[in-house]
Image 1 (tube, one colour):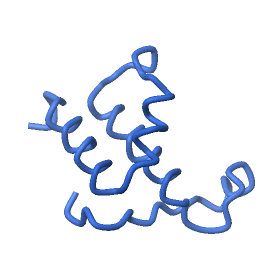
Image 2 (cartoon, rainbow, N blue to C red):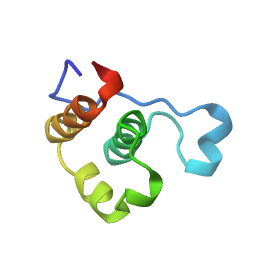
Image 3 (cartoon, rainbow, N blue to C red):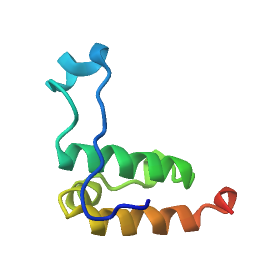
Length: 81
């Protein structure tokens, strides 16, 4: 992650826009949730170990903090090296 100042736009596929009630890019908190979910998948953290409440609390933080958490998860992934 290079730019830790602002949340990068996370586009929503047109076929999913109705289900997500999104007209364009996701709002920052939703984008953070997607990025955190992807980082957990890449770090091979199983769904049963994920705390959705904590994920939501992290997603509500600024992007710089979210990027640090995502980088930390990337470092924890043995396949990332």
